[in-house]
Amino acid sequence: MSHEKYKRIVLKLSGEAMAGDLGTGIHPPTVQDISREVKAAHDLGVEIAIVVGGGNIWRGKTGEELGMDRAQADYMGMLATIMNALALQDALENIDVPTRVQTSMEMKEVAELYIRRRAERHLDKGRVVILAGGTGNPYFSTDTAAALRAAELEADAILMAKNNVDGIYSSDPHLNKDAEKYEHLTYLDIINKDLKVMDTTASSLSMDNKIPLVVFNLNEKGNIKRAVLGDDIGTTVSD
Ligand code: UDP
Image (cartoon, rainbow, N blue to C red):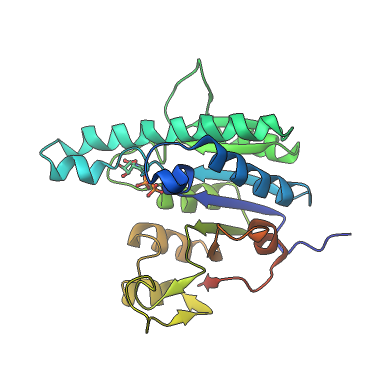
């Protein structure tokens, strides 16, 4: 019998995670690896909603820096997350994990529209719900979408899977060998220390709704399952 700590989670996967060594775009073998990790957690009986990012394809801020209208560029970023969601769905369904993609903006030929009650129903039935399109609003991030959906779906935690970093550090551990790893933080610490883990909107939303966050390394095999079981594998953040 498994003793998972969390019964219902929102897993935040960055777009970068989909790119693997390519650095940008979608690398199907990497998406397949991630799907096997998700399946290992799903096999415990945990209800899983996944919020996918889109930074591997497009970020609104980059468009703005290059002269685009910000909102227009942000809508492109939201569309990028839908491409990632479809790749993830493909890989999960190939290993017999039942899924539904729900988008925050209507795209009825490829996915359902996000409807909270319907998402809950899918989760109850053991389907992995992949939430794409972010919040559906420009000027927001998929981290904020994860915090928002976690609150709406009454998730027990947000699991934030990072690429090649095993938690939250005082500064970038790849650039600064003296960077200090934190075992536990509060959301106020993240905001006050300006730690680059999630943006302020996402942090304050999670803090207000008292949703714990676990930040861990996606690239270590078995880590999503370990995070669900409550093993000490990264940094935990609470209010
Ligand atoms: N985005 C947005 N509203 C949202 C979520 C995302 O406008 O609610 C856009 C924004 O342009 C962002 C892009 O989609 O840069 C990709 O999302 P994000 O940067 O959060 O992806 P990640 O960093 O997780 O790959």
